[in-house]
Amino acid sequence: MENICSNLELQNFHEDLTELGISLSEEQTGQFVRYYELLTEWNSFMNLTAITEFSEVLKKHFIDSLSIIKEFPELKNQEIRMIDIGTGAGFPGIPIKIAFPQIKVTLLDSLQKRLRFLEKVVEELELNDVELIHGRAEDYARLPEKRETYDFCVSRAVANLSTLSELCMPYVKTGGIFISYKSEKITEEADAAQNAIRLLGGKIYRQTGFYLPNSDIYRNLFQIKKIKRTPEKYPRKAGIPSKQPL
Image: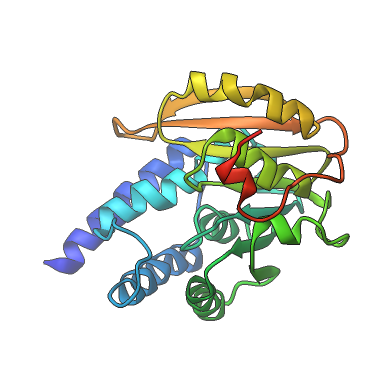
């Protein structure tokens, strides 16, 4: 019975992917299944996600992560350099990497145990061009080899847009994009972040609200374009961006 349910859920997953314009090989589908197995296995002894049902992980983590393709179809075939800030259990970076293997992905998180999990995922799924960084976003943004070197920065981290912008914008090259995934309509938060985004060299390019395929789950993608270099004083010292948003 479990296999029948799994097959039905995978069929629904592929239908959702079709709505996003994504098709997966059998190998890629297997990578998503193995990713789910590792997620639930490790979640039994460390806190990675409150969402554990197969169908819910497929929709709320995998499809949600891949919904970025609605706005950036170029991810399908371009060799883009992308960093995922506060990646947690690997969302959205790992699903994006599985679906679009030519993308070079950096995953950054402040908790070492999450990085150990991600090391296992990268190893078992045999993913290439994935860099794992344990540390604070504020610290690594000061390294010349990381600062303003990425085409895309993505984050599903839970923080207000002002704070996220200070953590993420320094990684984006001029002309690049920072994409913040949000689960609700946050017009006031976006308005409050306008000044911070301007100080950091960015501009809100577009805000897109939509429902995940075949669901009533509402999502928001905030696209912030880097129009000039971020001043050297940003980001401020670790912890300050969250305690005192710009």
